[in-house]
Length: 71
Image (cartoon, rainbow, N blue to C red):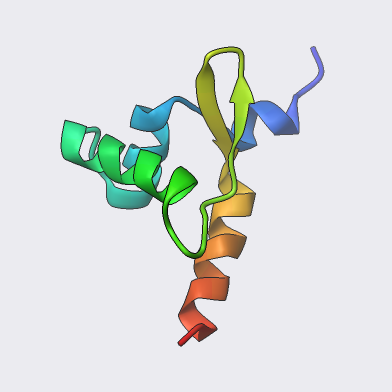
């Protein structure tokens, strides 16, 4: 069976994204994820898979690295 690298890089749902960024799936962190996808000046990279939001771990890491140099 072939390995799918996208499967390992994919986060589906606000809870999964919140767990990756904040280390918690608590509701307040899920709300922060939604805020970062819609209202933030420097928006979190995301896309839709059906009715759920999704993101790639690698894209989030690149986004975080860009935040480190931003003032």
